[in-house]
Amino acid sequence: MAEVAIRREDGSIVCERCVLGDTALTRMKGLLGRRDLPSGEGILLKPASSVHMAFMRFAIDAVFLDRDLRVVKIAADLQPWRVAGSRGAKAVLEIPAGEASRRGLTVGDRLVAG
Image (cartoon, rainbow, N blue to C red; front, side, top):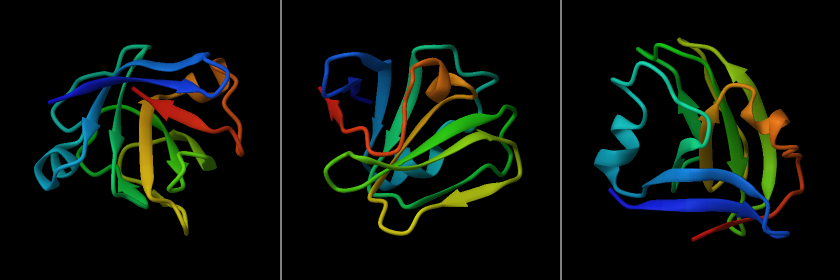
């Protein structure tokens, strides 16, 4: 699986080691089977407009992005066995719970993958 770094347009890092989940299999597997998600790691699911936390062992922040990778919604501290979605979202960045606020991520921020 390919890894990318996710940054804000200003260059500040949001996710240092982000797996690109852009196939049906990688999107379906997502973070399942992992015991935790260390700071700096995550997965960018695309296309995706919603996520489910079935069988997950830990909470995450789900950052919903439009086609330009602009943040349209942040579902912070999304717990196991919950779902979240956002109309108009084309991708979802899953990062450790609390990471969005620690990194100062807000709705309207534009992200860059690469």
